[in-house]
Structures are given as C-alpha cells and as structure tokens.
Image (cartoon, rainbow, N blue to C red):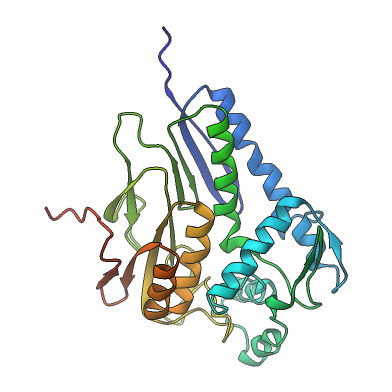
Length: 305
C-alpha cells in the first residue's frame, strides 16, 4: 500500500504569495492551483482584458461578464450594504493615487482625494443577468474579497477530487479543508504586527474554516514619521485611523472572512464587533496601545498557559 504524503505548491498571484499544501497526489494539487491564473485573468483590475478591467473602462456602459464575476460582485454588494459602506470595492482610483504618491515619497492632496470620493457610489452598480454597469468614474478593486472567494472555489475543487486535508494560504488569508493529517486542527499563527515572519502573538486552531487578517503593517510606507497603510476609509479617502493595529476574523468560508476583516478594520471595534456578531463570525483585534479585544467565545493559545 502506497502511503500518501503532503505536497505543496506556491506561486505569485493577486499581488501576493499563494501556497496550498494538501495530502494528495501532486497532480491534483497542481490542477487546483492552476485556477489561480484563471481567476487572476478574470478578476484582476491590472489584467487588460479581465472582466473587472473591462467594467472599469466601460465609462458607465453595460459589460457582459462571466457567471463567477457576477457572483463575486453580488457578494461585494452584499457586504457593502450590511457594513454600511465600510466595505467598498470602488476605491480603485483612490488607492492607485495613493500607491503612486507613496512611491514618490509624498501624500496626495486632500482636495484631489475629495473630488475622487464624489464618484464613489458602489450601490448604484447595476447587475442584469450577466450584464454589469458600473457608474462612470468608478474603478473596481476586488482586493478585499477576491482572494477569499478564490480560496473557497479551489477548496471546493480539492474536496470534489477527494482531498480531505489541505491548507490554503493566500497572502495571509487562510482556509482549511479538514484538519491536519495527524488528526488535530491546523495550528495557525497570528503574525505579530511589524514582527518577523516567524513572530506570532497567538495561535489559532483551524479546521474546515477560514481566518483573514487586515492590518496596518503589511503594505504601506512611512513618510515624515507617519505610517500610511493601504486600507482606506471610504469617507475620507485616507488610511483608516481608529487605533486598530490588526484584526483577524474567523468564519466558515474564506470569502466571508476576507470581506468582514476589511469591513471591521474600517468600521472600528464597536461597529465591527456588532457587524460580526450578526454574521456569526468571531474576531481578535490588536490595538495600537497593545490591548486585545476579541469575541468572548474565541479560544486562542497566547503561550501563557
């Protein structure tokens, strides 16, 4: 009898490193992982002929897109609605402006950002069958939900192929299929903000569930001793400033964890906790002052026992 072994594949998609490890034949794993390239060409705003890119450049005219693009857009609209706009994937022009300015060691003018925000009305997006109309002037950026959605789809393919133990890590978005092959849950380290890759402030158990973290430390730049991170406040167009260092959200599906972690970070602790309670999701939030706020039901190994 041939004993199955853990295999691992990785690659750079969606502007981050993506890794899948699974207890299965490597051909099955590679076939599932190849879907990353498919989804990047479908959903990336940087791919010229992607559905998202065609929507962004249609100047308010309807665009025919795939069933999967319709699905993720409906999910994005749902999270936009229930979060009161805290989750807003139409900040593409604003985020691009910030990225360009930070690369030049400067920040954008407030008046420039304010003018851009006048056009941010994601709720006016129209979906009629497979035809999508985004108001002119808006730019979709699905970075706050796409990786979770793609992880769920790839995990479904692995399950259909008979895989019972797998762990997907797409830039810190974690999704597990089953538990660890040794029988217990996967142990997932919650990274210490601004620490090394191996520094974790807590360990979480993950079995048939997802963990997504949003924080100030992964992407951004310090200018004149001020840290400007990549998570923007839809109301101001500037990086969120509410005392949160990082928040990890725990759900069953990766798409939910992905969108809710962004929504929580933007909304703040009080509104974020209320939103997650209504969605049956758990959270652990590290504050800038070093304190921890979390769901009472959430169990973490803090290394103190």
